[in-house]
Image (tube, rainbow, N blue to C red; front, side, top):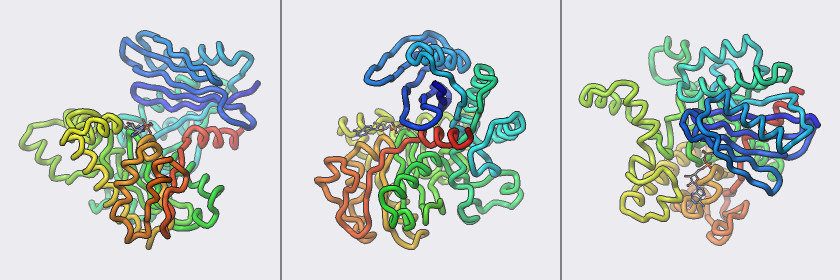
Length: 382
Ligand code: ADP
């Protein structure tokens, strides 16, 4: 059977799914975690079966080989004819999936300074797949692509123009998730799909997107995946003066600041306890409650800003691990938003129904699926 593989290669993990090349749902999915440590571990889900195996020290190429071994073991007779890659940055150029030719790879490597914590790992995953499957079609799907045609006022910073020209722009991320949600909305609510929508993707990373008639017109993430909402370990929006202070008065260099902003801030930094929302909700310490209060405050603030640029609100969608599962966070985001037409239905919210509101604006929960967006792009290319 001909199958396609989707890969989402991060700094210390590779997530994967296997789909029939023609049509249909995933045959298997899983991830290999702790790449680069001595304690790599692979999880493989196939039908109702889940296996977890320790794999010891492993790098990206070794991890991919290990994934292929598992696929070979569990899906005998499957032949991988194409690989779809999640790539965080398509730079100013790419507004749609691309075949990953050597020329495209060279261009994508030029965007590494724009996303130093993600892009090199994404491209390492592509190179590993190219050497494992020299004959397979390799397709790149970009998290920035969905936002590429947002208005100039949302694309730029108020810096001298030469920086815009050299790529210092607001790109926006989580585009595969927004693409999925937009498509799903078109299937379930034709009217809403052409209206004014805000999607809140609340996972370990978090962002929001203002979508008008199916197209991004604003997002909370900007030049990097740091901007906007506070996240598990990332700060979210910060006064640039704070960076000057850290450099001038704390003597911090860029490596230390990178570490602080990407790994030690957000929910973890504020709570001093955890980056994990479930843990914070259960902890109930004053600091974890403050972290949650800041988190929901920033989401409400951005929701108001997005409604302003949309000229109102027809639909609010929650997705991502927190958006999909946390009754409490959804309730706190919606609290006090009656002025926008939001009226939460507490019972529907507690039951995680797909529509959780009774007011003029519809509040929905849509489980996102970034892998299927990649699989669709690969199928289209095939
Ligand atoms: P990633 O961005 O890594 O894909 P997810 O979308 O899986 O992450 O989101 C992970 C977050 O979702 C974690 O903070 C986790 O605690 C949170 N989460 C998952 N389930 C629940 C729940 N039932 N209640 C609150 N938070 C939850």
